[in-house]
Length: 190
Image 1 (cartoon, rainbow, N blue to C red):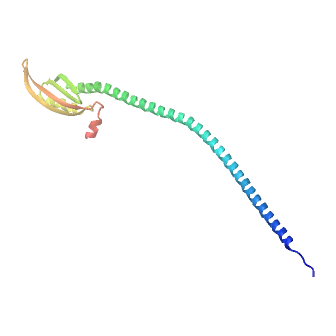
Image 2: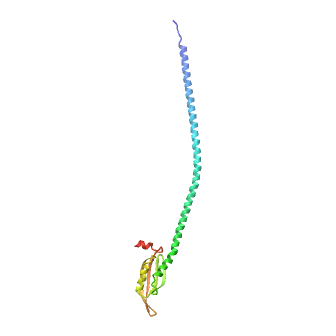
């Protein structure tokens, strides 16, 4: 009978398995290191791209911020100009209002029957004093004033008969509420 010594064969097989396992382990570690290096390079490239994009976007934002500031300053200037134009329109209306009101007052006076001796205006109130031939003339004058677009209300304060150089006259005092814009308050009151 022949005897075969299998012991060295098993030992060689064991060594071969250990070599294979060590080679597999080393290759796995190398593969893991290569994968980590690739991931690091890829992430570093993405980070560089993101930083470059952020820098570009910040420069564009700075450019747009200058435009936004310019637009805001232009809006402020437009607002100031609109306020100035509103003030100018108000001044033009205020300038024309008294002239027109005095014209309406002159038209309301019955000719050669009524004389105005004093006229005073303050805070939208007009005080009139004068003389008329009779009370009917004063009433006619009040109706004419109420028909004016610049006068909202007319109130008779007092009338008094006076004899002047042998002629019987009526002294009168009127209080009127005026609207310098020419009728907007009268329309709302009606």
